[in-house]
Length: 249
Image 1 (tube, rainbow, N blue to C red):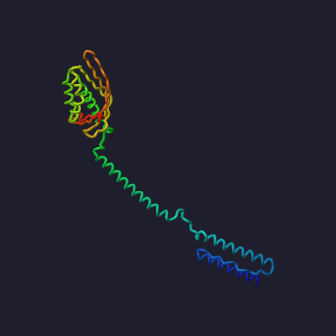
Image 2: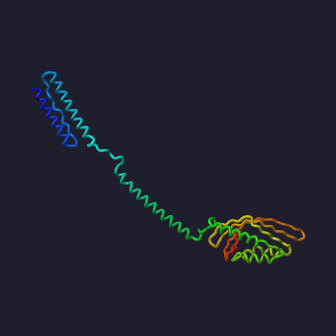
Image 3: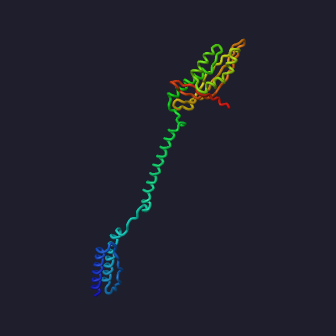
């Protein structure tokens, strides 16, 4: 009687496990029904083994269905993955706006005449203006009482604009005293630098040594150093001094 009941219960449990495998993805495990074991000890051990086998089958079914029930969580929250393209898009827009602003600013600087200084880039033109203005300064700021016509020719050749009157005022005393004291004024440029070079206009800083010699009864020579700036213009392929700045007020 007891053995027949156990066989019936076993068939019911096997049928239940098979139905759970084919029906729902997540099996529902029913708790084992309590059983009353009577009779001989051999029959009790057989029932216990059958119950353990049934539980192992149910556990195996549960293990096979478990991976399907659990889904792996993504490494990053979906919100971050949605925001990243938006951030990249905003950064692209900002970079594009900055590039447009930089291009416009560079173009405006190129259009500003006050910023068109090629003193450091146009080496050929810089060398040309330095050479010609160095010669011009040495000629117009040198004077020999014995040949005043040479100084006048240098003024006509190398000076223009307001520089003509400025030069006349600066050398007025030398011209007045030269015949009496037999003066010889010599100016030698020791260094020059092009501060601004803009097309046919330039500004240079001049460093020069001057010697003033009196060749009368008692010859006497005095020396002096000078620093001043000149503005220059290029006309007919020749650079001429257009203004003289002695940094005095």
